[in-house]
Length: 110
Image (cartoon, rainbow, N blue to C red; front, top):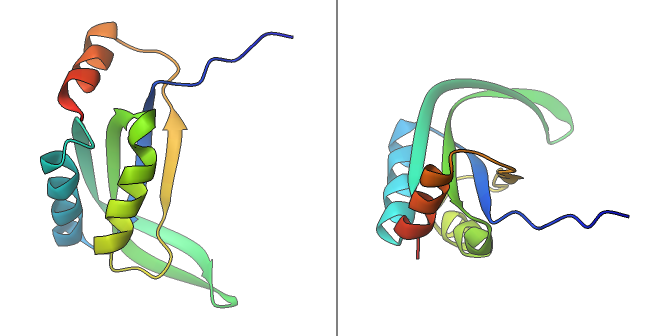
């Protein structure tokens, strides 16, 4: 059986209430060097189950580029300042890409 290597780099998706909260969380993660780059995507329409019914929200989405070893710290920081009761923080592996960019992520994160 082939051995799968753990990803060194990840993309973390985080939904937030609005663009103001998106900027706040982004600045905290960047200032503490937990992320190299964060895209803020305003105007995300979300549908989801909440308290036994289908609900919806107009949100912003953060797309965070970072190193996998920083995920636990990112989750903790976001939970401390995020306005939601249940925080969507989902990490996806980066399985490849521009090596120069991946090295830049390494150089810009703590």
